Amino acid sequence: MNQSELAAFLKSRRDRVRPADVGLPAGPRRRVPGLRREEVAQLAGLSADYYTELERGRGAQPSAQVLAALARALRLNGDERDHLFHLADRPLPPAAHGPAAHVQPALLGLLDRLTTTPAQVITDLHETLVQNPLARALLGPPPATTGPAASFVYRWFTDPGARAVYPAEDHPHHSRVFVADLQAVAARRGKDSAVVRMVAALRRHSEEFAALWETRDVALRRSDHKRIVHPALGVIELDCHNLFSEDGRQRLLWFTAPPGTEGAAQLELLSVIGTQDLTDGSPPPSPEPSPRAW
Image 1 (cartoon, helix red, strand yellow):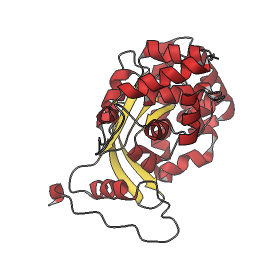
Image 2: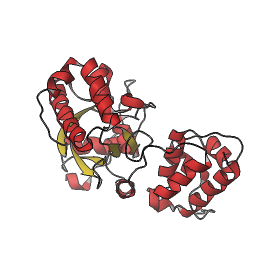
Image 3: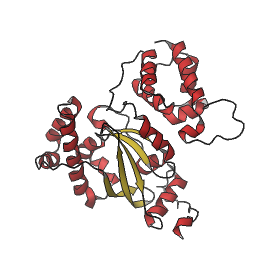
Image 4: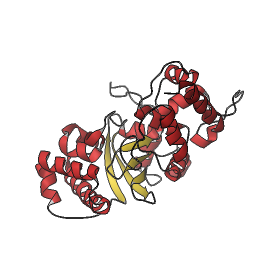
């Protein structure tokens, strides 16, 4: 591992990124040309102290997952991402899938601009790659895991706790949609090992999945109406939209509600409370009235 070159490369990329590029306010008295260290750390989900150690070349050994997060935070292109992994002496991550996959720049650029609605980028196997703050507040952070369990579809059929995000009466609908979507992905990706392993594991571990898989229903999920259970705000009715990358292996998901609806008011309140824990019985704050609701 070339710590001094890694440190210099990180600083050079940090200096290049402007706050507006990543949805941050410029603010007064900014003394650096690009992002501050603590801003990079926040965007990558790291502690400021850990990132500072990386930039100073003081012995931190970043994992592939940390490097992938830094590549996203610093908006690296594919060549720059590969260079970062080489400097850290880590094998390159899969090009198009897995939690360490490099987010397609076009989708990441759009995500940066979706600051008033929950949005995230996922793979075609429903592995979350990056979320904006409102998506994290709505859905919670993805688990820090690899392999099949990184996929929400896999957890949906193998971990009952994963289903708490939707009301129980909606579970059959989501099961059918997930399986039909995975059928389409499996057909497009052929004998891709990640897909083959996931389907085989799901057929072994879930009778529900196995039965639905045998129906051969096929339909990519492009949009859906969802009811999402939030621990503080209750059930939120939203429309979920999908935008696919050119190769179809990544998707930008964002959630909206028509102006004036209860869902729109709940989204507005969500932007106020963020990820605060409001499950202790304390009433949530009231949002300011939205001009569009009147």
